[in-house]
Length: 229
Image (cartoon, helix red, strand yellow):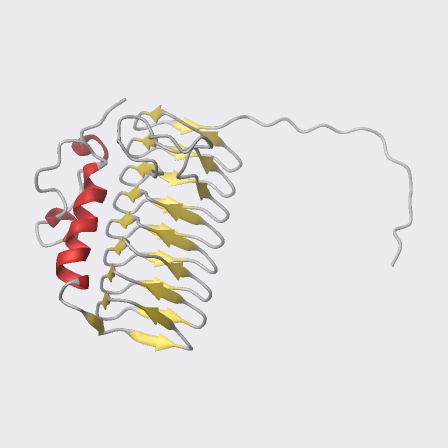
């Protein structure tokens, strides 16, 4: 398994918030530790409650938060801090952004999706009805509708080498998870890899791959049956 963050994330600018999360990082999962510390020092302890975006309906705020310019937050969204949300982000109706999340510029969170203690780099997108927990998404990475990034083992033990009992997915730059796919806790996916819909993945998947479980479709004969109203 590749643990160097440079294997997954290569495309970031010096002025991006993600760059500030890389100080002292030895293993890719340390980014989440730095994110937690950043939010504690810069958002929570400074008691920041700053919204520079546009609220397009009733939005519930809990705790501390920073929201950048040009960001649009739609009706029914809940934002529970500490969180950081950058510029030009779209958060669609019913979404839930939970504590510990850093959502960089130009990202989007889809209808009724949940993001928990995750780091989304610039341009990452989460479609509708998805759960992204304790994960790190690369630049322009994509999470399809209905995707689940499972973030805790059944036995509640530590996940891989992370020394944490909560850890979801590392998804490299420009990689994507297709609709209704699932990643097991502690899954690592390299850059430019596509995980096709309805696929279950685990462990380490290198960059530049196409991944599918190849589900088979079966057909048998049927009889005419009128359906009841």
